[in-house]
Length: 349
Image 1: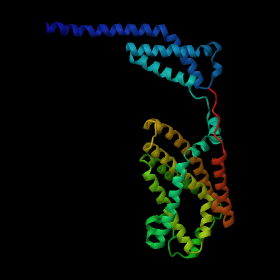
Image 2 (image 1 turned 180 degrees about the vertical axis):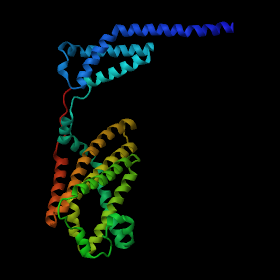
Image 3 (image 1 turned 45 degrees about the horizontal axis):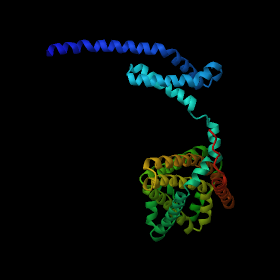
Image 4 (image 1 turned 45 degrees about the vertical axis):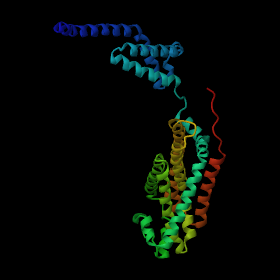
C-alpha cells in the first residue's frame, strides 16, 4: 500500500504541472493583447513621447490599467507561473506611476522648493533652531573660556592642520598675514570645492546623529563651535579680534547657518522620537523625516554658497568693512528669506 501511494505521488505532480501550464497559457492568451497595448502606451510615456500614442489608446489607458491590475490579482490568487506574475507586477507598477505619479518636473519642483517649501520647513522647526543656536553660542563661549584659563586647551580643541601657525603666543604679524587675501583667483576653485566637501561632512554628521535622540548632535555642535571660540581668543589676544570676526563673517553667516539648520533638523527628528505626542512613533517620524529632509536639501544650497564665499570672496576682499558688509548682507538675506517667503499654495487635486 505504501508503494502504491508512492507511485501515485510520482505520477500526480507532472499532471498538475501540465494542467497549471495549460491554465497559465490560456490565461495569458486571453489577456496578452491588452497587456502589450498597455506596455506600449507606458513605454511611450516613459520616453516622453506622448505624440506616439493615439487618442483611442490614451482614452483607454485607465481601463487597460484596471484590467491589468485585475489580471495581476487573479495571477496571484491562482499561482500562475513566476514569469507572468513578475511581468504583470512590473507593468502595473510602471502604469501606476504614469497615471497617478507626480507630474512635477525638476524645474517645477525647484521653483516650488525655493519659492516657499524650504522656508516653510525651516519655520516649522523653529524650536529646534533655537536650541541649536543656544548650544552653538554656548560652545563658542566654552572654547573661549577653556583657552583663556589654560592655553593647552587650544591644542586639544583645534587640529594641528587647521591651526596653521595660528596658536597662542603667535606673532601678531603672522596672524594678520593669515587673514590676508590671495593675489589672484587661480586655484581658488579647488579650495572652494575642498571647503564645500568638508562643511558638507559636518552638516551630514550633525543631521545623522540626531537619530540618537539628538544628544550626539548637541555634543557635535558644542565641539565645532568651541573650536571657533578658541581661535577667536588667539586673535583677540593679539588685538585682531575685529579683523578675525570680519574674516570669518564673509562665509560664516552662511556656513554656520547651514550647520545650525542641519543640527536643528537632526534635533527635530530626535525630539520627535522622544515625544511623538498623540501619534505613533512611526507616523510622527515620517512627518519629521520629510520636514528634516527638506531642510537638509536647502542646506546643500547654503553650503555651495558658503564654499564660493570662502573660496573666492574671502580670499579676494581684504577690507574689514567690506568683509563685514558681505557677511552682514548674507545674514540679512537668509533671515528675510526664511522669515518672509510664504509656503507654496497647495494645488487642487
